[in-house]
Length: 341
Ligand SMILES: NC(=O)c1ccc[n+]([C@@H]2O[C@H](COP(=O)([O-])OP(=O)(O)OC[C@H]3O[C@@H](n4cnc5c(N)ncnc54)[C@H](O)[C@@H]3O)[C@@H](O)[C@H]2O)c1
Ligand SMILES: O[C@H]1[C@H](O)[C@@H](O)[C@H](O)[C@@H](O)[C@H]1O
Image (cartoon, rainbow, N blue to C red):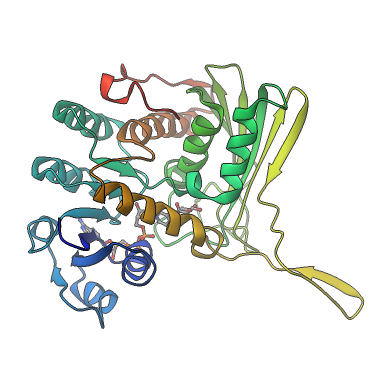
């Protein structure tokens, strides 16, 4: 391995450009070696001022570019399966943004391909596992001092949804984070989902079912509810309250700076994920680089990516039918048996 891990970044949009900046300026032990985006101008803009980076329209060409030793996938979810499988064929470690593969059949192909290798190569970008508040909550629940967790009440609000965002994406893109966080925090699989919705906000794009209220059941007897509202207009808010047998704990309370003036008090609210989860993304990518340089793979696995896709698909069916929908996971391959969630 070179002195600095050479990373190919696929997709140079919002997340890809931010990860390129992170790898170049914040993360130690790595460098951007190649970037691919069908929009070549976007790729070139994202690497302006960086030395030794090749730019490609074809993502697979970037995997084969000189100096590439690992891959960071930040293209849209439906484009993830092909480079994941191609990275496995080449033995390249991958950090893949969520959703790993939104279609669960494709997600299972990824799990089976990695299980067939007999070793992990993929880490999935569920960055909340690296957020300081989420980690404190996880430690508290694992410690057991509050008794068993009974319910999680979650809020997931975005200021506005990007063009092309669909009613299904509220679940398979946005709520995919809560699906993973709930599985991780509780150490339980989600077994059924029901989706209710109020009248859509008049500020949501025509036809978008926004907001939604998603209710999950787990194999440990807990309940998880998620208010997802992606055109709330006022801020990026991600909250979680765990209600346990002997107490509760809440994170994401927007405790930033309290400004008091002119007879009133005002707290700032983050406007997007790049601000709210900046530290989590930094820790996530640094952890991935450190583990990769040591020949290890840590963090959320392809199995976690698969489970999230299956649960989200059940959620989309529940949204369409208005009924309770069971979640059916394939048998878990041995490769993922020992992962401590
Ligand atoms: N972890 C998080 O909090 C978080 C936040 C935002 C987005 N994401 C995820 O990151 C991914 C990218 O989202 P985004 O907001 O940056 O989208 P975006 O639309 O801003 O950027 C996507 C980029 O990928 C390019 N692209 C399209 N097809 C491609 C392909 N086959 N290969 C390479 N590049 C391709 C597009 O031209 C575009 O530049 C998605 O999976 C999304 O769910 C994660
Ligand atoms: O892709 C984004 C991203 O995952 C954000 O973290 C989430 O808040 C958005 O709802 C989603 O659309």
